Image (tube, rainbow, N blue to C red; front, side):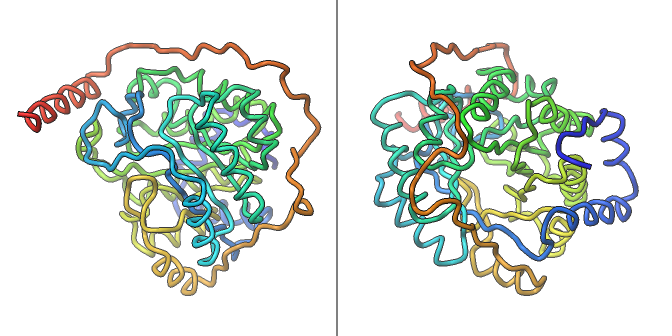
Length: 367
């Protein structure tokens, strides 16, 4: 069994739908073959630029067209990012992921500042990840040169259901970004969200989408939707913990060597539910009391759970002697590519209604 095996949809469905006790046992067995079951990576997610995103993702409170009462911020200063990372490292985090609410990376002052952030975090001997929207190959190569380890760009759901959630960019833009990341020598972090109204077939479709990449992602976050007031999915019911466990276990079996990350939605999960997720193959969490804009268990609560389960935060091993360098030989593009990201523009009724509601609220606040 390896990350390059091509599973059929029927095979993955059979894994997902087997009796839960058998599924967890199989996933735990696979997990122990490739990972230390008592080690867990603790990551810190820092929103370096919050809100104002032009996309219409139905789950996202950072979309400018929705009214969600989040505090919008311009790009965070370098010293503040480094200070947050230092504080996170002191409480057991070995990984930092920086997120910016951009449609795509644009060359210029802001991107130059992100490059400096990556250099600073890499020099702290922390594993560094960024999620900045769509990137070209040359932009990804600049990030790799600066010392970035991973680039996150979730495909969210199946290609078919994607059209029911987002209309401002195409599913293939996500795939192209991930392939650009792979060409640049960065590691790929890509997963999805469950609980958006999708079917089990769509959840399997998301894993099938990841299988279509030239190489399997080294990191796969599984998020449970956190419904936020003002977004099109604000009334969506919280996904049952059993569905989360099934998704994590299935992902673990299909991608045995990848790190499966238990990401958003932990505030809605009991300690027992989270323990089942770890047993089923999740070996990473995001720490701190906030994930970008949604609540998350605090550091103390997580450490209590780790102590109860006998889990130990893993440390990142040095992969060089302090010299930032790209991780494999790859030629940098000579000039920036001329990329035109798509704008499908079809109408998603829920998204349209949420945007109209936001306009009414803003008009009322001005009057």
